[in-house]
Length: 501
Image 1 (cartoon, rainbow, N blue to C red):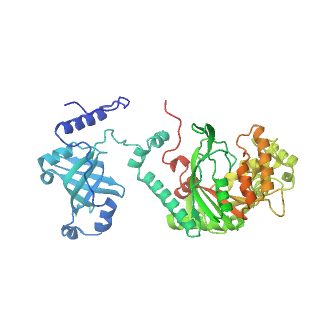
Image 2 (spheres, rainbow, N blue to C red):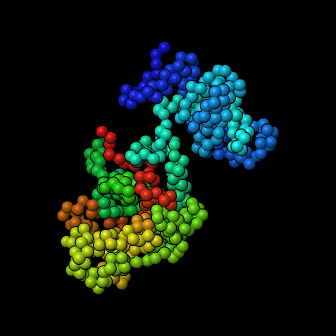
Image 3 (cartoon, one colour):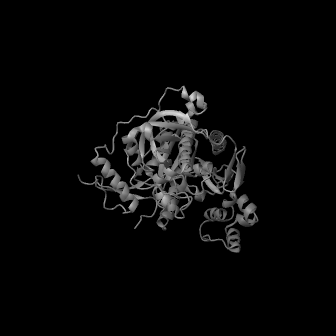
């Protein structure tokens, strides 16, 4: 009988070959190699919850024989008996396998099993001399052979990219990594419930768009063969969500994937997850309060505290949070004079004097944002709502009633990172068209991240969009904060990496 076939692209190694030989022998002996007829009756977590508090004497009276399925972790072989842990989605449980219980053939089969193999096991529960709840196996079945040995020092790898590339191994051997993604799922559920309880409707909008818009970012370009037209992966769902406000959905939200053809760093991944929501008859001030409520609700559920450790800092989410304008932040953290930086020449002089790596020839509003990012952004550790954004950098936001050079907008910073962006929405179609035209001038000058003119969106505004406010929250960065993760790659299951050569 021929050996089990394997991909010629797989690396050859002595341990891999030994495991393949075991698989071949099992096949020759008539054992099913990849059966799919084992039904576990529960998980390790459920077993621990039901029996974890019982004494050794009480366990002897338990007639129930749990059936578990999972991966073998950490075998200790002792001749005619062995201990190992089985790991499933609920956690780990120790298993005791002995020859006189499993029988000659059963124990021989167990001896062919390796760390990493997926098995089904059933038996009765007892406590070891050290007090650990343990299952004494009455039977063990091999469900899937692990042909590659699990790494012994995976967590400490100097090449962290190896863990990102083989996330399946990372999840297998590092419980703390599994915990991050379980928390991520929980945070998303909490956010969905938070908005549904406040009357928001969850919607879905197009991920392929004929005109990229909703944010100043370089889009990914694709081609639709049947329509013979160029399409773009969305950089944000904003313009479609606001069309729904026009249509009469007064409170909407979307948990969505967006794509930006820009750099990769510890804060940026070209494909990322956002929450965007829009509320009619609300202002950005209303969203400040709503944002505080949302973060507090997540903190209380995930951490049970408003004191959140993040890196070397302890973040205090107790409300109300600090508010600063861009100018105030440049003065506070950059040592500038507010009167000096209120003009183009003064701001340019300050930037030159500080040796800041900024473009001195951009309009005043753009330069102010660049200077803020250089001197203040990284120092906004405690929750801070940044306001006072110039109209030049906010093409979709409503102008401030008292100062038409500014818009009603905030960005939220925690731990030196932007987590949210919100503003009162521009619903004047004539103003919006003029803003688009100015963006097109910038685009024609070579800035392919500037917004294009979306005539249909202007037409939608001409039907009348109610006064409203909207916000986008980066889910990946939010999860980084609540799980104390230093890199965005730590909270994305499969982050984009340079292809291996």
